[in-house]
Length: 451
Image 1 (cartoon, rainbow, N blue to C red):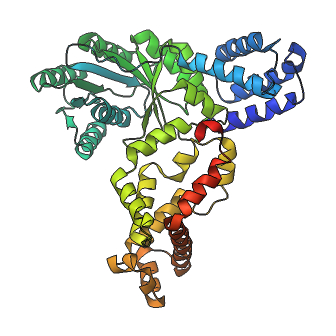
Image 2 (spheres, rainbow, N blue to C red):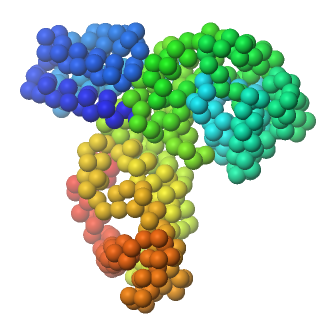
Image 3 (cartoon, helix red, strand yellow):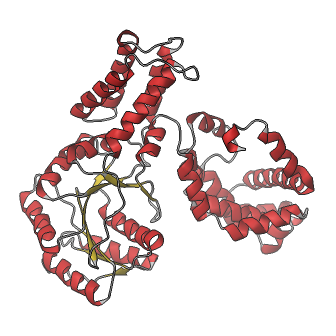
C-alpha cells in the first residue's frame, strides 16, 4: 500500500535541493505535485484541499535547520500533517464495560468482515487475555457462517451457533445470552455485507446496533476500494453510531487513499489495519508509523515488535549457544530459521517495514522473495533427518530424490546447498570470536543512538 504515493513524494522533494528557506514560490510547484499524488492515490478532494492548505501554512517561511535540506524540512511537515489527518482520536478498543462487551462489525460486501472478526478475536485473546465468543448474523450467505465456524476451530475460539432461518437480531440476542451465561469477556458480532444503497439491509444493521448497544461499532473498509470507501463511510456513518474504523487488505496493491479519507469522512479513528491473509496479520493502527511508511521511512519499530513476538527465543538462544561453541550450523537450523521467517509473513512483509533505501539494497540479495522461501522449505522437508543433520552425505542420487520429492529441480537443491555452505562458513567464523569482531566493526558505522 502507498507504493505509488511514496514514490511520487520522494520525487517531488528533490526539486527543493539547494534552497535555504521554504517560500511560497519555491514550494508552490512541489505542493501542486503533492496534491496530484494524493488525488491519484484516491484521497478524497476535500481531504486533499485541507491537507495541502495545512502543509502550506506551516511550511512557508520555515527556516531550514542546518541539519536539514529544504526537501527534508518539507517532508517533516508533511509527515506531521499526515499523522494529524490519520491519527486524531486513535485509541485502544473500549472494553471497560459490563461483560460481555459487544463489538459489532459492519461494512460493504467483500470488505473482509468475517476474516477481520476472527483476527480481532485472536488479537483480544493474545494481547488482552480476553475470552471471546464469535457469532455470524449473515443469513444471506450461509457460507459466511461456515467460514466463521472454521476460523473459530482453527484458532481455538468459540463460535455461537447460528441458524440461517432466523432473523439476524434474534441470532445476535441469543448469542449475547450465551456470552453472559458462559462468562465471556467479549461478544464479537459479524454482520452481512451490504450495499450502502440498500435501505432495507441498512435498517437491519441499525436494528442490530439498537438492540445490542455495542461498546464498539467498527466500520470495516477495504483499503483498495478508493472513492467507493468514502461513499460507503458516509452512508454507514449516517446509519450507525460508528466508534472506529478497521482498514483491511492494506498489504495489497492499494493506492492508500482510504486511510487518509475515511478518518476524515466518518470522524472516527482508525483502530486496526489488516496487513495479510493470516489470522495474526492485524496491527493496531499507529499513525506515526503509517506516515513513515507513506514517506518511505519504513516502520522499524513494528518490525522489531513483530520479531520479538514471533521469533522463538528458546530456539534462537539454542542456536546462539551452538554457534558460540563452534558447532556446525546444520540444515535443521536453516529449516527452523526459514519457518520463523515465513511465520512473520515472509520477506515481503518484513521489507515493507524497512526504509526505502534499505529495501533497494535488500532487493539485490539472494533468497529475496517469498516463493523462494517456500521452495527452500519444501526441499529441506524432502530430506531425511540424517541428511539435514549431516549434509555431507547428500550425493547426486540423493539430490535427485530430494528434487523429485519437493517438486523442484536438482539445480534448486544445488543452489540451496551452496548457499547453506556459505552460511555455515560464516557461522563458524562467528563461533571463533568473529561475532565480537563483526559487532565492533559495525559499531563504528552505526549512529550513536544504535550503539
